Length: 128
Image (cartoon, rainbow, N blue to C red; front, side, top):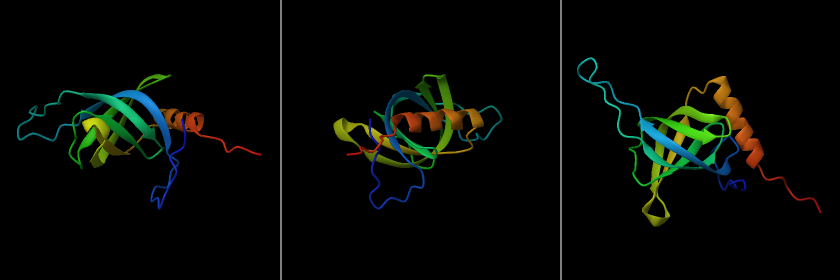
């Protein structure tokens, strides 16, 4: 695994490559009637990179930018749900969709797990 090198980068947080299984749930929009909200079927895919502020999720199905989502990461600590908002969607290789998600309101436990993931996947520079 390696660090994704910033090139003219706007991100303020270190982003690292990972390969985590995950599922994504779209948060339902409020319905016209009480109880009318419906959750969509989850999307299964992989988290390709992660930072303390966002992640990149690869899926066979796109999600509209602006949608609120919950991504459930499968990691050493178990299943970790994180909330966020879709900020971009791009078509990747093989017809898969790369969904950029800005993380929102992470609880302390989730921040610790993500910090551990970033630190454990961080590439240390080689010293000659």
